[in-house]
Amino acid sequence: MKLTGSPLAVFALAASLPLTAAAAKSGGGPDKDGKYWIRAKGIEASFIPYGASISNLFIDDRYGIRRDLVGGFDNASYYGIDAQHPHFGGVPGRYANRIKNSTFSIDGTTYRVLPNENPTKAEPNGTDTLHGGPDGWDWRNFTVTAHTPTSITFSIVDPDGKEGFPGEVVSHITYTVKEHQWDLKMVALATTKKTPIMLSSHTYWNLDGFANNETQTALNHTLHLPYSGQRVDVDGYLIPTGDILANKKGTANDFWSRPKQLGKGFEQSGIKNNCGNNCTGFDTCYIVNRDALQPFDWRTEGPVASLSSAWSGIHLDVYSDQTAFQVYSCNGQNGTLALKKTQGLHGNKRFPRTIPQYGCLVMEVEDWIDGINNPEWGRKQVYGPGDEPYVLQASYRFSIDGKKSA
Figure 1 (tube, helix red, strand yellow):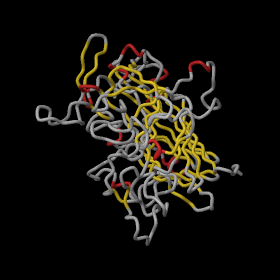
Figure 2: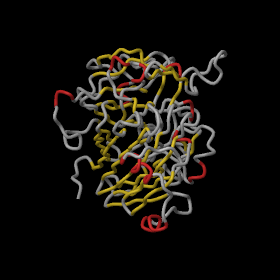
Figure 3: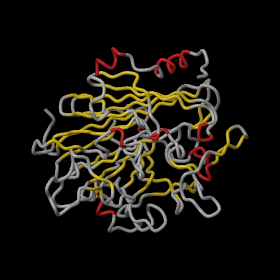
Figure 4: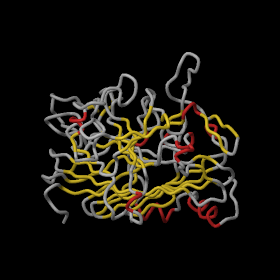
């Protein structure tokens, strides 16, 4: 592993060291299913090294019934062999979302990374790159570098040339819980060359724990994006065109003027092809416009997103230091992915124990997608050895609508 002698590089090296026996013992180590647990009042969550993924997240609903709110698998070993691999709960990297034509330029040099989406006869492997390529970070095992009863840290060393990206990147991902709250911090350091870095959390949410006896989808969930009056315009393959569009009031992408059920958006103008060619739903990068509020503290200014379910009563507020927010309404699910044993309605024959189309919602805190190919946006997405590290922070805060947390 190549590292410079800077304090940041030394810090990165420390974050990449193997888990010590003392650290493993302090958090209890993995359970029989390969999951590492952290707990605080009103919240319990498990994580796995594969993709530094969240695998379970338990919150009590309005009736005091324990609900597992995130998609995943029962056993950690299954993540690596699942044929569909829907990026369940992982950290996409080293560049989240899409890269147009699988190419970008840095200081006049053009790089081509491995494609893995939208194949054609001429390009059977794909015409663009999604979530870091066919072997992106959420397909790889991280190292557990610290584990306490309330926190866990994963690290990864991404070598120079992997998936075609220039330079080595060292990263650590820290998840922490406190009363009714899950926090994350992602730090990445380019150690040898300038390279694109943009991370996110790709968690699949269903605030009913997939146990709603009235609907199997998440279209009953209410979403509010109070700062997102604009979105990144994309083509039919979800590649940014370079334009920024207004989310007009009363249209499908209007979640800013007032909270709205996801299902209501399916009845409004603009929903057809909203998630790509021949796709009805959401796979949309909303801009988080808070510049007029400067200076502000992202931890207290207000959530960039709020999601709630009237059925379970669970309310989730998302706070973030990022300037974009991707919403994906699980348009690609087709009912073949099984629920975990901790989810769904056992013994109910009305609904199968699988995740259907629109059965979940992915909410990705991140920067503007494909900013590396749209320099006119002025995004900081290329990092070099002399730069400060890339940092992403977010806080997920849970409550029950109509009831204050104890």
